[in-house]
Length: 480
Image (cartoon, rainbow, N blue to C red; front, side):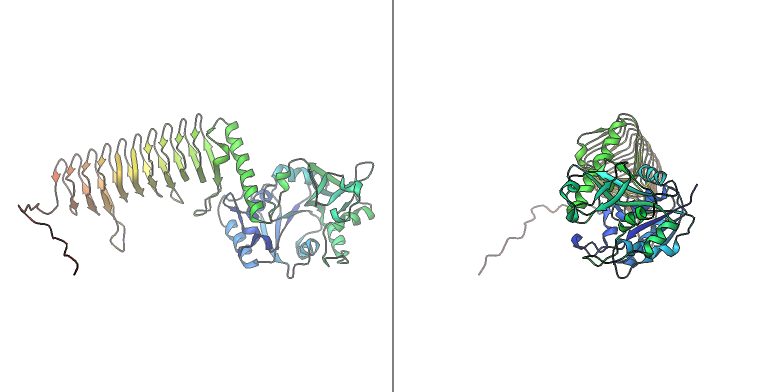
C-alpha cells in the first residue's frame, strides 16, 4: 500500500467570522474545526500530517500540540508538523509550503481546516479512487450549486476541468456537481504541478485547482468520487454558517442515538460536545430505555445505564449514571478529570450540582440546591435541600439537614469530614473538618461541630438561648 501523507490547509484569516480567534479554532460541538479535521485524518492512519498555518499561527500550532498531548484524543498516532504560509497567496501557494515535507513515494490527501465533518469512510474511498497513480477529487452534487466551481466531465466520465461559476457558460452552470476542495494525488506528480502554478489571474493567487488541467495535459487520469451528502464538505466562513453546521451535526448525533433506542423528547434541542475543561472527546453511551428531556447538554464521556431519566435542561459531563437513576431538571454534573458516579436508583436534583469526585451510591437522594464535591455517599444517604458536602465520606442512611455544610478548607489545605452510618445532621449545621461523627450519632440543628462526635451521641454546639420579656424593638426616628 502507498504511504499516506495529509496536508491540512489552516492559514486563512476568516474575516467574516469577525473574531480575534483564528477561523480554524472556532468551535463546533466543543471542538476546534481544525481538530475535527485532524481527528478524521487520524482514522486513516497516515504516515505524516502537515498543517499549513498563517493567520494566528502561534495559536493554531499550540492547539495542535495540545491535542497531540492528550492521550486517546486521536484514534491513531501520527507525526504532526506545521509549516507557515506567509503571506497567504492562495490554495496552491499553501500546499507549496508543505511540499518539501512530502516524500515522493507517498499519496497526498489535501484537506481544509475549516471543513470539519468529512467522514473517514469518505476519505478512504477518495484515497482508493486515486489508486496511487491518479488525481482523485472529492465532489458533491448540490440542488443549488450557484457560486461553486463546476466539475466538467468528458463523454467517458473522466474529469476534464473545474470551471468557476463566474467563468462558466450557461450549459456549465446547469451542472450540479461541484468540487469540495479535497483531493488525493501522488506526491511525485503533485510536486511537479505545484512548481508550474502561475498567479496570472484576477486575484493574483496560486490556485490548487489549476493542477486538474495540468493532469489532463500530462495524460494523468483525473477521477471524481462524488457524494450527495453536502454536510460532509460544508465549510465555515461566518457565525451563521457555524451555527447552521452545529445544528446539522447535533441533529445527526441525535438521530444516531434514537436509532439505538434512546428516547429524545426533542432531537432539535439536544447537544453532545467535547468537554472544554478536561479536553475529553464527546461520547454518550446509553443502555436500553434511556429518556432524555429537552435542552440537555452532554460533554465529554457520559454513560447512562438502563432506564435512566434525564430531566430538562441538565448539563452533564464526564459522568457515569447507573440504571434506574433519575436526574431531575436543571441539574449540573461536572466530572472534569475526576469524574462523577451516580449509583443505581439515585435521585438527583432539581437544581443540584455534582462536582468532580462526587460518588453517589445506590438510592442516594441529592435534592434542590445541594452541591457535592469530592465526596462519597453510601446507600440510602440523603441531602435533600440547600446543603454542601465537600471532601466528605457519608455512610449509609445518613440524613443531612437543610442548610448544613462541611467546612473543608482552612485557607491552605482541604480536610475530610466523616459521617458514619445512620448519622442524623440537623438543619443549619457547620461541620469543621477534619471531624468524624460516629455511627448513629445526632447533631442538633444550628450546631458548629469542631470535635469528633462519639457513636450514638447527641451533639449540640450553639449559644444558649436567651429570652428577654417585654423587650421593645427600636422605633424609627421621625425626620426633622
